Image 1 (cartoon, one colour):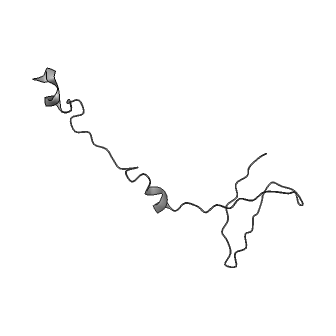
Image 2 (cartoon, helix red, strand yellow):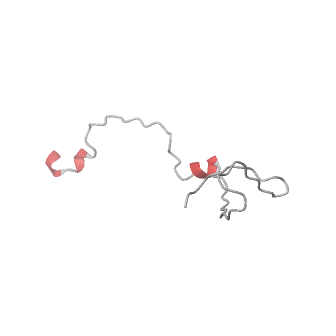
Image 3 (cartoon, one colour):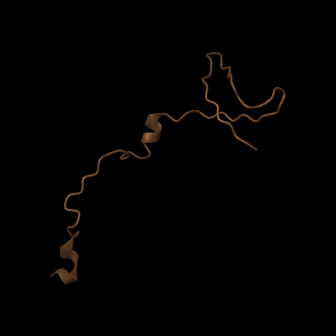
Length: 71
């Protein structure tokens, strides 16, 4: 089975029209309708995505006073 993606917008009366789909007239098809994710909804899952990262002293040991060998 092959899946084909088609994007469209519902009309005001709720009618869905698809154009240029690769199936023959009279052929049975299954239609699954999913809404597009809004940018606000998808951005809330990863709030730091795209945020620049600055490393301050990346080679300095972390919490070196907590190590027994350091003292």
